[in-house]
Image 1: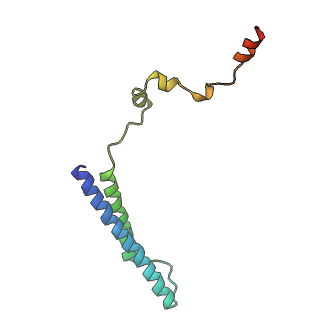
Image 2 (image 1 turned 90 degrees about the vertical axis):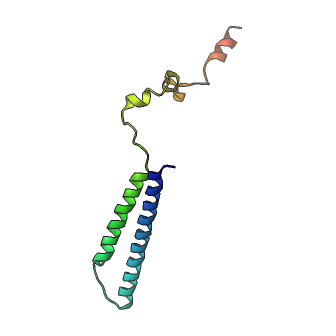
Length: 107
């Protein structure tokens, strides 16, 4: 495992912890509002900022953990395959054919 992958996993873990804390803070805030019988339409700014920053941190960690990107061209994918793998189509294989009928009619 490379150092970039290890650092990426650590960053993912930190982002996940921050996101869990933001969700817990949201739960506590809504519970408090329910207890004091107040109705507010929006969450506090600090919870919103914590949620957005945790998602950004987690996304950075995922980008570091992910491997190199593959080409999207069919040409590069087809260069790796043989003609036998490409031309084989199981939907055209028929096991119920008329060979045994023809064999029985010749006798």
